[in-house]
Image 1 (cartoon, rainbow, N blue to C red):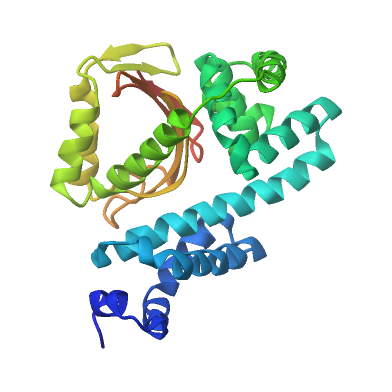
Image 2: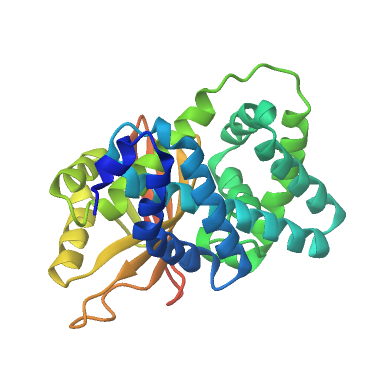
Length: 309
């Protein structure tokens, strides 16, 4: 059997079939985890392979094919979920919510308007931006889900959404040339966390890089209101996970706007400690000058919320 490098460098794209048969199971596993056992998962995998086939000439390092493919599959899944969610929301949301939903979706789909949307979103205060990102760009769209993840009452979520829609409508209607800085920055941080969060549990150099990314005065705030400060607390928790055979296995979704990133992640535990980590968590990362200063962690399966700031 030819190596990935040989297949990658071959001028005959028929060799791409070899990559397909070797890695299609990986692609399907990712899609099923994100989309569930639905037609959306199958469509996402098919779209991902078409995109990979079309753009493989852009991949310079043949050994990076699998992580490159994984990112393509994940992006295809998120697009499929956004499409399905848009249909569901359109059927259930009030007229005002439909308008803002369609506006945001159309901005993402129209490349010419993409940069403006990212610039507008990043201009919102963090608490409003987080609420909008959860409502319109994540799978946690209900007021109750958003309230649990952000740690505020449902009424506050409703108030923040109303405030956000007014600000967004005003900003989106303004005429300005936003440039692509916000979009490029968002793509950078998405790719960074998709690599270092699961990769840090396998590769010491990635773990070191991630730890260096964290501010020394990391502030941790729990649901009870208790606060502790120190990067060492987070570092020790990661070492404890690894000691018990647990690891962050997959970044299932990653959305960034400005200094704010929202991630949905899944964990794997060892047979000896099957309950050490929850199966799924929702993370909110907040940065200051490129350093991670806040992380809010929502364990969906257990209903436990904690804050890392």
